[in-house]
Image (cartoon, rainbow, N blue to C red; front, side, top):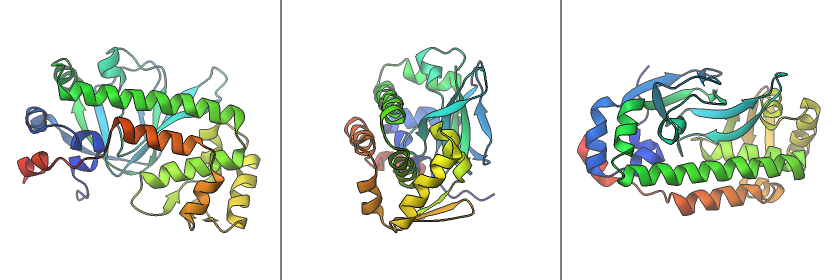
Length: 246
């Protein structure tokens, strides 16, 4: 499969300085991720950290009865493997690929070694961890207090932000699992958004027709998460890194 993305299409890798990138570059490897592919499961210790570029993944937590819900979404804005530099131990949740695509991975030991230098890589990863914690906390509030229609709107907006098109590949069943709600509720919520002319839904394909209108239907959680991420990790192209690879 031909490469369609650069490592610097991932915001975290793009934020690295030239020296940090040059140290890690020999160990960076491109991987293709398939839809519904598990990246890690509860109790596993990851061998690599993954930095998606065109792929999109969901961080899920599962109960003993098998019920599950999404705690965060990770795309080209982040990484999979925060536990590698926070504790180095096994994960307590799981990560599942939502949208097939590419990612770039770095061996756990290499990433930890760079993190422990206490330089810019550490600062970037800790800022991302704070943004991820904010997403998890906001998601908990959203599920408890906001209407399903609002939650569906936030879900679609977040996925569209991490996609190269206005089309979102996602079934109503997948949305229901991610939000931890009944499918009937998602059907009603998506139907309302479609009736308002904001989206077009057919056979697992959701096309965002009116971005501004969809934001109006979303709860405040979407703006909170977007603004917090931009505050912590402003998207700045790493021209030095691009020159280093050219």
